[in-house]
Length: 312
Image 1 (cartoon, rainbow, N blue to C red):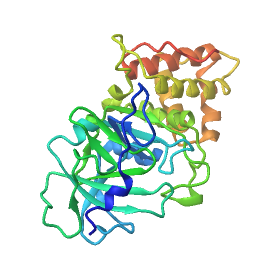
Image 2 (image 1 turned 30 degrees about the vertical axis):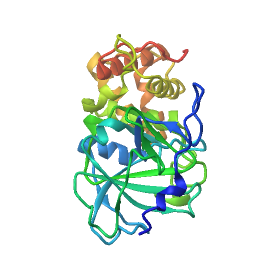
Image 3 (image 1 turned 135 degrees about the horizontal axis):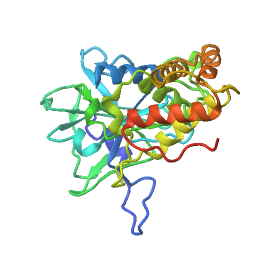
Image 4 (image 1 turned 180 degrees about the horizontal axis):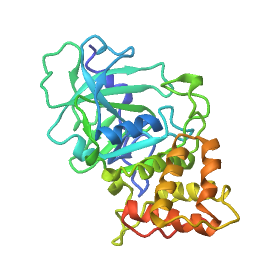
């Protein structure tokens, strides 16, 4: 291996002004982005499970299992899905070693891969120890802050499962409108907006009362327990979708039956089962009935008040 391979992706100079440059961006968060159904399975399992490296990587015959994270964001939509599990970089790399794996010049933009591990691979012929503090490659630690070259795609390979409870926040992103890394043009989520995807994802975990991850949707910048802006937007989308299917007549169902029915409606929405949704939302009653019961279900699930509700 060319031990200087990473030098062509070297981080640029720090900006002398308060803003940053594309070639020298500070970063503190990395993301594992996946499709809705895979994200739901992750919630159920409680981990992002490491898996074999199966693509053209030099590691594809080594039986190395990794979890994938990246510091990149996607201006034109993610090719990996809509649901972003976000981790604090300092937690991911604590007491870990860094090894340069490879680069892919033919990717657009070009990509590089770095293995992050507890294991000692210093004598390996496949990977090379990566010097994080000398500023010679695409990521750099100056002793206080981490920087990356934003002109390239960073792919970090973590050779262990990632505990979902260690996830800092769950966010939603747009899916790319033409490309999908998993299913190609057959992907049913291609061009799916972040709020529609978020509404289906949250509808599933609220409908099934999977409360283990609700903390990841609380806004950590406020003292009062409130939802993140994205979670609020996704729930607003749920309210608007239900609003179109309300009845003109009020319901006489008991409160417990309303809650049960509302959760069934949310599960139908999560599966994008619009025919079933059309037939059961009206059973909840008028707009006001649906509004009140959905608000109760959401607040019970998240254990917080939901303020920013769509205008009914």
